[in-house]
Amino acid sequence: MQRRHLVQAAGLAALAALALAAPLAAQAQTTPFKIGLILPMTGQQASTGRQIEAAVKLYIAQNGDTVAGRKIEVIVKDDVATPDVTKRLAQELVVNEKVNVLAGFGVTPAALAAAPIATQSKTPLVVMAAATSSITEASPYIVRTSFTLPQVSVAMGDWAPKNGVKSVVTLVSDYGPGNDAEKFFSERFQLNGGKVIDKLRVPLRNPDFAPFLQKVRDAKPDALFVFVPSGAGAAVMKQFLERGMDKAGIRLIATGDVTDDDQLNDMGDGALGVVTSHHYSAAHPSAMNKKFVEAFQKANKNMRPNFMAMGGYDGMRVIYEALKATGGKGDGAALLEKMKGQVFESPRGQVLIDAQTRDIVQDVYLRKVEKKDGQLYNVEFDVIKAVKDPGKAK
Image (tube, rainbow, N blue to C red; front, side, top):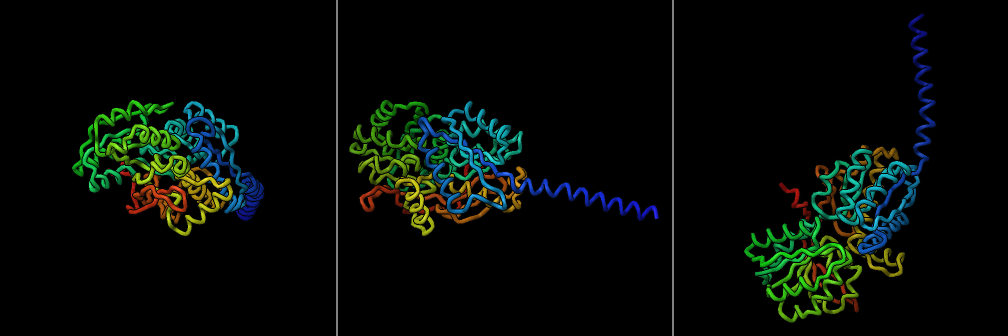
């Protein structure tokens, strides 16, 4: 008799616990799922912020603002690409706004500034732009949907020596991605028999390329290899042409940041023939990309999407699919696990979020600037499939 009463009591206690848990579960499902989007909306990298915000809005418009019963709420904060500001905003978003995911991060120092906050709070941090190889190693909660500079630089280091470039000078912005581009291009170029005459590094803030380009002209290499962040390519192109370096027989080769789709038409016909290596072009010929570009331009007064937009668009896809896979729970560790290993067809081609490194594996394209329908485009002519970040290859 006593045992039966104990069993009944235990059963009643379990039912009571379930009754209490049910409203809490329902409350969790009705609480908005918050994404803290930290971007440079003003300042030198403002084009990055504008592109990513537009892509995030487009993804939500196309896929709905409710996932697994959770209303999606995006909170945009402008960090002006300044790490101290990024860190403060990330803290405020996690502590005050209680965001489920941090995302964006236009430059490497910004992503690194937020990394400890993601770790301490167990909040997934989706890097949609910043491209230094080591970023994903700064926190076990970082997932990247953009690219790495080693991915795209190695491809150019293979292509150039096979296409008449025997000597180069490298010119990069002096911070993480630039150092990666210089190192991985130079090593691969030299491995293939090329000669690096000089390595030049330009300050990231308010750069003046003129004295560096004069040094290049005096050195008379076959080509100049360039990396500058998104938004700075037009200034390099303008000064390269003003100094008549193309007429002096010096070719410009670069990562795709230089012939950024957002600025390419403003560079003029002097950009024609420039060869770059990158993971996305608005001219990528897939049906999915054509639809993406058309929808993006329609929603943004004919603005052409660039590779930053692609990182934002696919970043939202990774977040949405992880939230679906957790049944809308939104717990940080559970979300992170469902972000790892995602494989999907993107407007850029097939991509994979590597489960071990949490970094993106994707195709890298060689492209040449050509004129189509009166506009300049990065037209792909070769592809290296499923490129892992060479910075983590070992």
